[in-house]
Length: 378
Image (cartoon, rainbow, N blue to C red; front, side):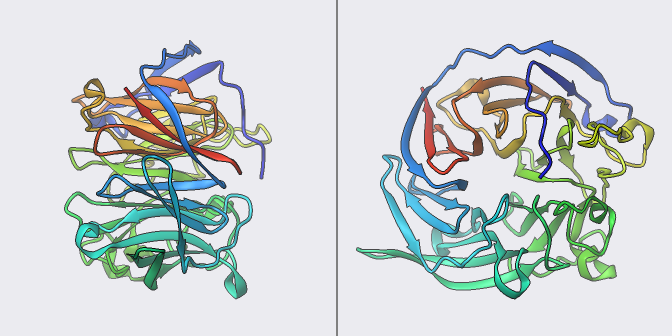
């Protein structure tokens, strides 16, 4: 994989209002790197092997995936219970066992969803699967496991995406897909790469999708032109947001709206790794620009909106992790739809995913072979 820029002495932000999504980007400017004082206590409660995603359970415990192909139930105190019957995965580079998301009716069904890269004859194929969590006195396991969606074309490189979100009424599943390091696929309407899909909870295609009549990948596509989206979440107003890794610069925050094309690889706010320029969004008004972008990059991953009581001043904010930057970033939103970076904190490791507990504590996991599970509390 090509190296990413790893200097963070400046930050370039693009802030646009939602109503100006097709206008030329507004340049906020490069500002000196100033890290905010930490207003929370950080406690490492457990260690995991390359954890990838957190799903908060109703009772305060967490389902956590490890990229090599393991899953655990973890208590807030750090006790880990390994899950049996987890599918085998292709673990290499960015690929492996990826996201976990509780079904909207998890409290009654115990069902959840995972994404992973399949090994074997169709190695590297991204799979969306559904299973039921079963626990007894001595073990926990997956039952009723079934694949409900597989990627077309089946194989591919890294940058898989694989992030899951559910709409507020719990009727549809959104799946963010990276370009698998074949940039041109993001603009190919018949390849499930560089897209955000909208599916029914069983993996079938909703009839009110923008291109339902076209069938295939086109029928499932909600938006097009994404490079490597590693965060996807709905805010309290029902708007869907994504974060996306850019190339050499140009990490993005996007407001996701049906039928829109976000431009990759035709446009970007970053450049190619060899230094050759990529046209900016302002040069191609048919593409939707980000509402905010970072150059230098932060390598954003994970996204969770905050509505807790522990930090009431942050209600309505979103928290995003940073890999190469080793940051936790707070995004602030105003009533006109503009988004800005509110704070950034170095918490001592590569932040892979973030989640918010019912008590308002913020949880984060570290992307390394001895990755810490952190609780951030007041």
